[in-house]
Image (cartoon, rainbow, N blue to C red):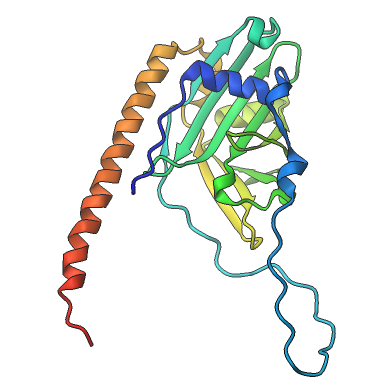
Length: 248
């Protein structure tokens, strides 16, 4: 079954980010509520003599998981000021990446709230089954940018915030690629690329017309549906061939 997720309306996305910034905190779900991951059932003891105490579990060292190719929105800048933002001007320079079936994987946003320091926010959905205690880690064009905890989880995903100074902003505007790293439940590192092409243009330019953003998202949605249909047809074509194989 195809999993298709309609793109969020631009202003609705902006308000979701504003709520995550603490402007409308009543809708937030505290991070500790999500930190209580279910523990696996303890193995039944073998009917043998008591064994020596087990050594502490070590993180798995297998090959890091590889993401399929993602489909990204363009960098856009959305601004709003009104009662919803406590009369503060809020601007978001935003880009997100999704799988071909529409499942969101990453959102990267430069958040500007009037009267506050700028922040770079990365959001990873709970559907990736992240290891919440580890937070996220950033690498910008091969340079380590540090780590940040998940400060809150909402229906959109789990958020990590990084304070941005003038030097970091300069690097982002001149950069090529930001790597967002998060940890899976088995402690393997999942690296998610976010191209910074046109980030500086969106940051320095005027707010994007919401209608333009909606049109971009409509085209992206159509492309995702096209990819999903191609994958479905490919799978259907493979099934008869598999059924025709002689049984051993």
